[in-house]
Length: 336
Image 1 (cartoon, one colour):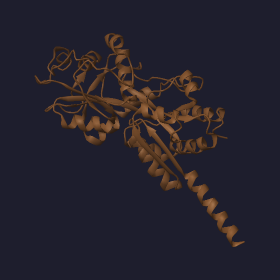
Image 2: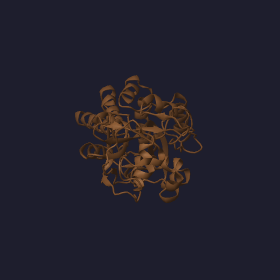
Image 3: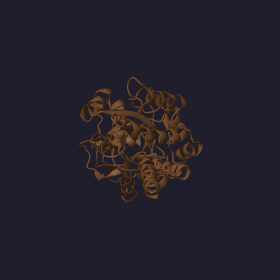
Image 4: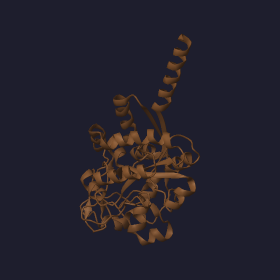
């Protein structure tokens, strides 16, 4: 009788342990908030969620191979590709990509960069900070006659995809020569770095450099970021208020599995490089998927989770988007 009781307790404990541990990997764009959510979730529920970076490409390939419980990607997959890989997809949080720079004497937000200037820098057509295309939008700045060092992602990156989506929409020449992708054969002489954290640290270390990073890394490193020109032609700084204007006008739909590229959205004051980051789930792991969506349902509704997102520079999803995601979960039988 005692032996049977011990076995019952052991089985129950093992079952609880397995149910409490989840592992995800992929995009570094949301890495800071996923790590913070995991800490808060553990304090509240004692359930463990581990998330590792590696880039969106790694997140897509890992979950396609059924390695881990969920994947993270800033580059959303279209319905045909999701079907081919046997995946489900929904957005988790909204963030932004900023152009961080290291130019002595030029403070945060002082440097204005048009899409033509940004495209010129990363294509290699603009190589000096005092180039006339940059200078015409910055008449009051003393731009140095120094060589620009662009820092880019070396891995398959959703941040690269969203940055180049902005350039493809804003600059016809860029769209023709490079397009939007997770990896790019850059025309400029670039310094490659793996993941948002290493891009940020490289910019901090290299004088006269510039690179694209998620806003949370700008906050954590204290880097300066450029003021950019919107689709409507006005100039906007990288601020949560300007990111929120884009988040409110997203075009997510269940039919399209939430596929939407938010970069270069119309609207006065809409920051031009805003992006949603997505969660990918295998469509053949129903019970396990329920544990994953339980975590994200908590993150979408818990006030401390939403406050943490804003503190790190992200925008929580609008209520109507969250409602749509819950409906999507029900349709796909991963929530009662």
